[in-house]
Length: 255
Ligand code: PEP
Image (cartoon, rainbow, N blue to C red; front, side, top):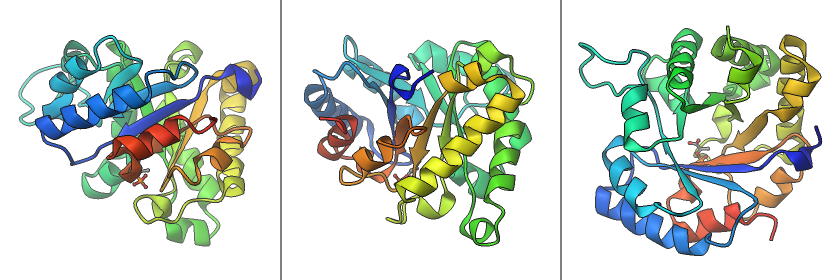
């Protein structure tokens, strides 16, 4: 499948930011700025506390709702966790899983990522599975080994149809929140490697349909050159998604 057949997906990860009223204000401003966009899947991922309010604010719009994490069990004695049925109930279509901040600060592993991916899929949520190497890993030539480990670990046991309900986000850890973006060539190299891994594990047809986002200091100034690469199908945006104007400019990367 040609790149042009894959709908670009631009997602804003708000991380630990925005009260309910701030979240609604941001969403309302964003909604107006991107109302005419029909060729991009637009996603916002507010904190759990703002999901219901943002759901109401995006009603009848072209913006989809995502959570930033999910627990692998549906219910039970797991104080502080939020489950896939709960996220579906509040109106999420997507959930970010395995973000490097969760791997780094909250002991997320490939195994827990895989369990969460399966729980999300079982309840009709589309996982955005984050993968990416740290700076020392890149500098010591381990990028491909780390990416292979994250991709195969995160997607273990998924059928082709399940894989195609997922999005993979390549986020080099050294580029997240640092202002250091991967060059378009660096991003393309890893995206093409990921598509190659999935070609081997599934088929060329399946791999060619999968959306692979890039994340790491994406800004209005660099979005279009990254998106021009043949295997870069979208962006997962942190800092620049916290303001409606800059996120809208990234959403409109091709205008
Ligand atoms: C992210 O958190 O997924 C991210 C890419 O952050 P930033 O855009 O701020 O680098």
